[in-house]
Length: 119
Image (tube, rainbow, N blue to C red; front, side, top):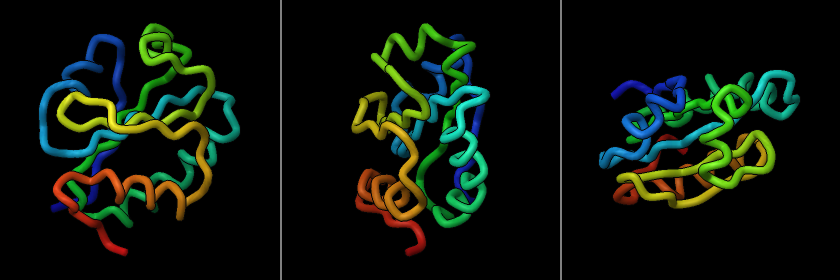
């Protein structure tokens, strides 16, 4: 299995990319242009996805400024914010990007069926 993919979502495509039942972790990255912490995560994302090689997951990116209705729908107050979904259910939320070890730990804790990516 290839490492997880990162997909851009819009208000129109969000529900089909995130809310439809599937046995994989969906990490939704609410970001915005000009956000320094969003840029830090974006720069780290390729390496993070490589470390999660084989994990049953995907990353769905949402520009919170262009799709404000989605940010409002989930009660977001700041970016970046990461929401974790599986089978259309919200499992957790991370506000801000606190670095690679923390991010990978939270993701691994929420992978379906106890699946673990490379340590």
